[in-house]
Length: 310
Image (cartoon, rainbow, N blue to C red; front, side, top):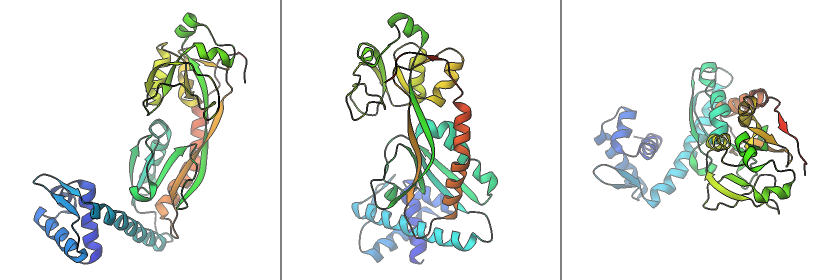
């Protein structure tokens, strides 16, 4: 086998977690996969996998090779896309990392339209709010909210905005009253969106500066669940307006104007390269063309509890 074939088998093994699983996906025997990896290791002069009877884990050298092999594979696929772009639809697998709630409700459904529009294109989505290293993860693109560039190797394009406001359920407001100014929030119960261990309440309106420090009763790392806690009357929450709108329409939530809404950019990030795969360019254009309208439709005008704003 040539170097490209060996690298392809290596990448499949790294993604699958075992030689047997990689063999099934490549229509090769486990023995053939093992021999290919052994040849690659012999050619490189390093050991790429720790081998056990049931699992093969990457060694430190394996992780280094994975980064470079993935990058080389992406470059080769990009070159193929360039030559094919004038003759047919985008091809290959679009791998995208999406924020959980926005990905579930909007970005994911939009990207899942692409195989129907381009039959030679496939889509693989990962939904998580955890930060990723886009250069090493193997994703073609990532969608992030309020993202800023922290790497010279990453490009960014704005595809929409997300407005955030404060909400509470009627049962909560009946028991504890409606805050009439920002200082009142210090005496209210909050439910926070957080992936950390702290229960310190901080809204997108006050992040990085002095602001309300109400008591956080609960902490969750999922926006849909955060909305449910407010509907149940457990506290005041900060939510995207598109997510809260259906609850506001039924009277299950009320928007509080004690703090003015804040808007944050929604951006697509992708690795900088001389050749961007056609599938990536098609996906970015598709999101930019359809996401704003979809989000605007979801965030219909709400009945707001009118109080003092900052």
